[in-house]
Every structure is written in structure tokens, then in C-alpha cells.
Image 1 (cartoon, rainbow, N blue to C red):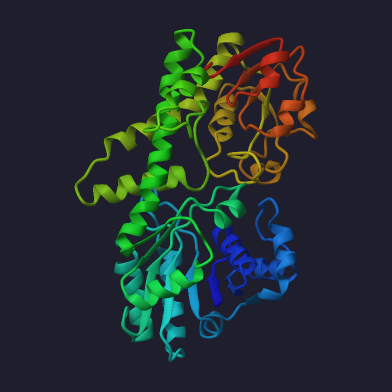
Image 2 (image 1 turned 45 degrees about the horizontal axis):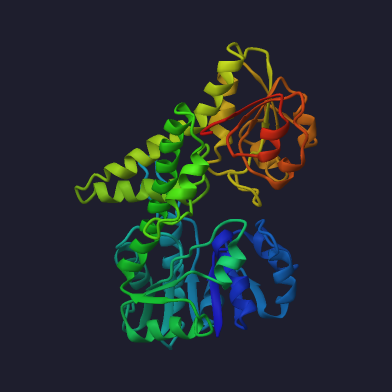
Length: 422
């Protein structure tokens, strides 16, 4: 099948390259020609382990264009993968996706055959059938579900593990309102053996939000229990090792620490809260999950201040700036509030991350960036905010460490060691 991918960010690039690896021909479109140039040269516009190798392997199946009409008209199905950033009130901003839909709609005028348009971007339930459909119909002069298809195929990609998550998914969710679009989606995923859920578009959109909201809540719940367990002299890891064996609960996402970040969980939980508010529903559990998550990284600083009450002029090291290991993504990184709190206390901050220092410097140009993780250990104290594997190979001898990510090497070798929930 020939597939056009609209948007060459994280979701679009991974989706297109992985579909190519399954034998489909891909045409990438983006308004950012730098991304298209990188893909045309066989390079990824985003960082994801093994993605460059997969691009090289499938170069013959990958094409790029700055002409969206050509992308749509020359393919069998189109995936919209553009960003849906948060507004100040937490609701999602559909500006990028509506702009794409309007341009796609114009392209549909030149497409005589039935052409499915699949929204892979994360949007609040009702968005695809509402404003996105309206933008497509107004620009094309055609009718959805009759002249062109409309569907939802939410992504469940973890940064750092996205290729595995695409190729070996837990489930695939296919939302459509007409048989032709559902059949096209089914054909795309024929070779996948995981469970496939065929449902309405709104249900598919809601499955995505509910999944992320539940996982975020599970993390905050674990951290609340971990905070109490620490005061009781109990290791939270042992608690959740026992709790996770209950088949009704499961062990995943019970790792305590300084909370969740990234481009999905915080944004999606806020969007679900904001969207529910429009229907007169207050999602109290999700409000609480965000409150816990906002406070959790600051516990790291409070534990440090229990050891060094006056941080003014003290050199404090921070290990880890990306929101998680194996990515350069700093969106909603827990290191951001930690470093801001240190600066507010007039500390001198020296930080290190294997991939994220350049982008982090755009937020905090005033702090020092170390050439290596080892160089950070000369600071008066060190805070660990991302669980990079290389941090397990350090010798923390003589160092005061306050750990937000349970680095075993630090607990064994640091002169003074304190964990957030242990």
C-alpha cells in the first residue's frame, strides 16, 4: 500500500519508517523542509534508538515531498501525525491539525477515488468527527464516509522503545465509521498478530486518553505510597513487588521516584481534565494525580536541604536532563522544576545528560553543563533525575547523593545516600 504521512515529528517519522519496514511505500510531508531534507538523506529528524538504521534499510520505500497535494493524490491512504500542543487551560490546540485537514481537503478535490484520512495525532474524543471532519469537508466539497474515509488509529509509542512498540504492539486500535476505511486499516495491519480492536472513532480516541491517564495515575499512586513508606522505614520497591503479583493489578508502572514527564502523560491528562470540564465533569482522581506529580520532584530538593540547609553558593550537580533515558526529549522533564528550585535557592548548578544538554541549554543557559557524568561528582552534592544506564557505572565515593530514580551504584558507593521514596 502507498501511505502518505503528514507530519515528520516523533509519531510521523516512526510510523512511516516502520510501515516501510513492513513493505509499504511511504511519502513524507512536512512544512519543515529541514526534516524532509534529513529523511531524503537517509537520516532521522528525531532521536530514537535504531531508527537511523531502519531508515537506511528501507530507503527505497521512503520518499519526501513539500507538495501535500502530490502526497495525498499519489497514495492510497493518509495519516495525520501533526502535533496537538496544550493551551494554557490544558485543552489541546487543534490549529496544526485543522490547518493540515484544510490542505488535505483541497488535495481531495484532485482525488477521484475514495481516500481514507486517518488521524494518528492524539485528539480529544469528538475532534475527528467534529472540527477535523468539518475542515476536510469544507475544503474538499466532499462528504466524509461517502466520498472519503475518516478514521482514528491512536499510537502507543514509548520514546526510546518506539520501534519495538510499533512492530510488536500489545494491541492495535482501529476507529472508523465506514466499512471501506475500516477495511483499509485492517489490510495495513494484516500481518500483526496482536489483538485488534475495531470500534468507533470516538471510542478509539478515548482509549488513547484513558490508557495514558490510568498509567499516569498509577505512577502518582505509587509515589504517594512510596512517600508514606519512606517515613515508615519501608522500601516501596518491596511493597510493589508484592502488590504487583496480584493479577488484577500487575507490576508495571509501580516504580517510585520523582514522577512522570514527557510529551504524552502530562499533556494528555490535562487535556482529558479540560475536555471533561466542558461536559460538566470534574475528574478528581486525575486532578490529584497531577498534584502529586507536580510536587514529587521538589521532594528531591527538600531532602537535599535537610542535609545542606543553605544552598546559596553551593555547587549542586544534576545527573539527567531528558524526561527518561534513551531520548533527548526534555518536555516536562522532572529536572526542570528541580533545577528551577535550586536556582531559586541561589545554588550553582552543574548538569550532565548524554543527549539532552543542548536542548536543555535553551531553557537554562545560565547553568554549567559538564563534559561527563564523572565531572558532576565533584559538586557539593548530586541529584539524580534520569535513570541513564551509564549512571550505574559511576563511583559515587565521597559524594552526597539524593536519588530520584533508584540508581543502585549510588546507593552502594555514595558517602551519604538518600532516596526519594526509599
